[in-house]
Image 1: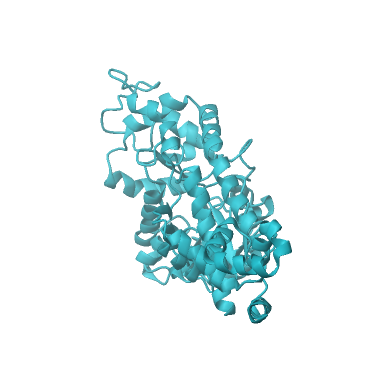
Image 2: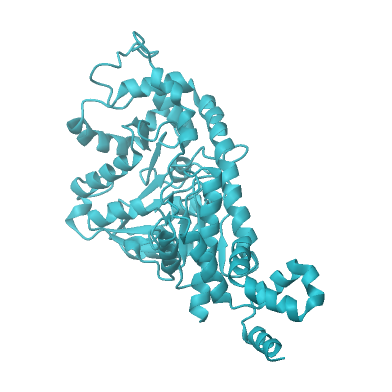
Length: 471
């Protein structure tokens, strides 16, 4: 029985691990059909149960070899799938197609009689300010409406603080060293703004309630060079966390060595729920005013992921003193924003209730996509301890953490298999994740079948990267 002895020896030396996925099963069946025939010939009584034989081979065969076969099978499909950014899908953009016919010929005046075709109105149309006021939980008088990009407003606001002395300051930030606190994992474009201006970034860990406040409080109390903190307070990018009331109050009341410390409150996902009503978030304005720090906050929002990403409207909200400071230079920069686009949005929504109704349509498209990712990850990785991931109730992202030291390898493997992910490290300042573990998943853009395939590839790459480390 030399052949039987060889097979027994082979099976006995293979590593034990559960790699039972449909992809691995197909690869094993193709690669080991000859071995299966041999096993069937020697152990005829089990050939009637081929499924059990396949499962036996799947369990006892080499973990690494099985995963390599599965990965090679994905690569052979010549995939080209993109999950790098949180872009609205075509079906989401289609929800706002009606806007392309607005405001319509001859309908160029708003309810206040403003001719939106002309110069002026730097603060924005009153109805648009009113809609954003409800989105951001502030007064309409606190709102300044901009162009299509809230990121541009953030960039310009940083720049203005670097160049000019803001309320509470005797000099501009730019005369000395400037540092910013950056909750991590966080939004890479926030970090890019800091980096281009030479602002030193200090990572602060996030938890399930928001940034770890004991770390934030200690840092801002001891260093006057720390001038601000980036915050995505609702459905945070990428973790999906919504800040608790205690965290919001702590940010508002904490003692800061810098008198001109600012909270950059990027409320990008204020109404981006996946189900039901938007999550509750304590007003940063109210919290700061109650704490006696009414100038500390500056809030940002936009309709970029509500209507048309390339044709939305942005807004900034701040205290009256901060608005006066900002408008002084804004009035030198522009004679007025795109009021025709603002009017288009006013006509499309009507009011804030129109925004919420519209966002429920987005949720109907997005929720199934988040469910697909979670379902595939659970099917492929649950119980493996190879990765953990967030289950957000809103926003645009899922945050996944591999075992330390694996994220870059996983992203590279996925890229080589035709699935583009956000670069590993992007969710940390300077692109340096000290644990090399965080991967941001953006489910919004791909259609369902492509999203499922992309997530299967990701799961396979996580398993393969882990198996190669073990080898």
